[in-house]
Image (cartoon, rainbow, N blue to C red; front, side, top):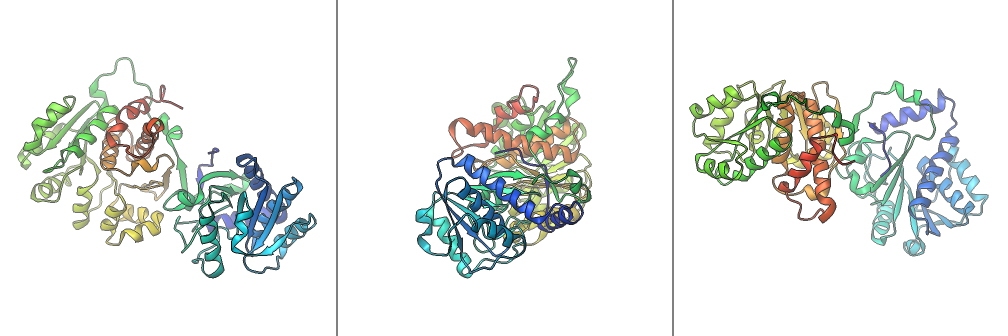
Amino acid sequence: MSRLPHTLYRADQAGILDRLVIDYFQVPGITLMRRAGKATFATLSRVWPQARRIVVLCGPGNNGGDGYVVARLAREAGLEARVVHPVEAEPHGDAGQAFAEMRAFHCPVEGYRRDVFDEADVVVDAMFGSGLNRPLNGIWAEVVDDVNASRVPVIAVDIPSGLHADTGQVLGKAVMAARTECFLALKQGLLTAEGPACCGELSFSDLEVPQAAYASLRTSAIRFDYEDLGFLLPPRPRNAHKGMFGHVLIVGGGAGMLGAVYLAAAAALRTGAGRVSVATRKSHAAFLDATLPEAMCHAVESVDDLMPLLESASVVAVGPGLGKNAWAKMMLSTLLVYPHVKVVDADALNLLARNPMLRDEWVLTPHPGEAARLLGCSTQTIQADRFTAVREIQRRYGGVCLLKGLGTLICDQEYDIGLCHDGNPGMASGGMGDVLTGVIASLMAQGLSAVDAASLGSCMHARAADLAAEEDGERGLLAGDLMLPLRRLANPETAPA
């Protein structure tokens, strides 16, 4: 994947930017269209150098105009290119000019037929752009089904047809592209929810517009990865001692769920917390002591058992394996009035949803199901607009909200949103969230702010999963496999590039 811009925008912002470039900076629309087509064809040629037969699916608007430019350039390069109009169209404006320029090269133009993909090495999806906000139906839905079933590789122009540019949701049907060439403004929906699955690999071109054009628009979100944030962990001084790096207390591990607190504690240790303590059920304490001797394990059955541990902790994380029984409720009700509670996850979030409260200093780390309980809605509602969901959780509960999932989102007190761009499908396994809890708590204990700990922690966690999957693949990746990569990433001066 080529390096993408860090700034993300909504579709309406991209439209404003487009008009600003044309009207204020005096860059003609046809010039932008030619540059977009040129960027798309350059990527197509680089990724599929052996392709000879190109089918360009064109819609009725400017996205179709970009497709006409691709078809013209393909013909100029000596390739077999044909334009397919699923619905009869009479291009006008800039798209009309691009159409005329293409026709000068005698490019075939035809209506849709189902076997057209049998004659293609690559398909160019130039049907609908980022302005689409309604489900595809009729012939358009049929074309999407057929191109997806054909297994011919697709390069999408700016955005796969049928994908919502703001939310990353599929509008009924969407093209599953192998590659997407984005222009001018990188849309936020391409990087979360169903966006990455539809887009494939992403490339970006700013279409050579003046950088001053971006100054008048506030970004909707910021994309980051481990390379962007590793600087937050400087090398340690030579006179370092464990007291300089905080004391993390992890509370959880109800009956049958010892593994959750084990993973959280191990992750906190591997990412550099000075000391790590675990408060868990009496039945678990001795076993955890034996399997993770670097952590201090305490049998906690009552508030009296818990209070001395709170006095010495600098950061408390609650939730991994906590459960929902009377013991869990007692632990959480005690902790929620204590100022050192910094990370709330898993069952603690489910209990918090029943008795909401607002705090400024904590990090909440829900997955979509837990987010739905926090907001009293369905998981489908959360996933339909993850950006709105993460803002609303932050507004209701305060602090920093980290909404897990593909394209993890982090929202702070200013309602600014960051998007973690690391990770892989192998992370869809039990215990991954417990590891993330330990990482964030550890970073906060080492002095990072809540938002910095959540942002860097999400990237370290996801990048560790990427590193762990490199040798043996994504399927079968376990949460415990992240521990050694996490240690490498906690030392940016020696971490892999």
